[in-house]
Amino acid sequence: MTLFGRFAKEAKASIYGTPAEYELAGKVIECNHCGHTRFTRTRPFSMVFAVAIFKPVTLECENCGKILWFSKAPRALE
Image (cartoon, rainbow, N blue to C red; front, side, top):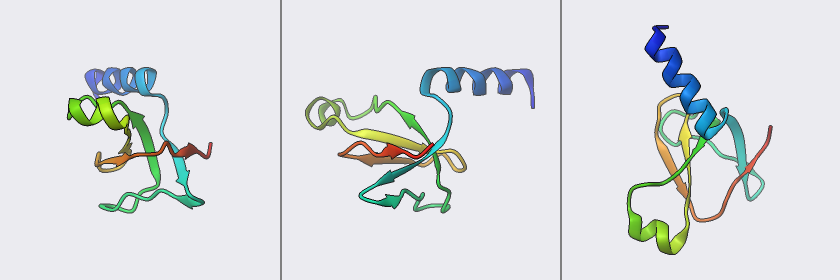
């Protein structure tokens, strides 16, 4: 891993935390693109109108980077 790649990974971990498994309504959340189950919780900066009214929660897949939006906050399992 390059020095920049390592720095970017450490900066992301310090801002958003470490990847974990999440569950909602008794089911483990799974990425609908790649099937991975570990996500990093992120802050939704786009769609300012939706963020101001609905206060969504977003999770970014650790494997493929797909962002999943939720209206209720999922619970971390680890």
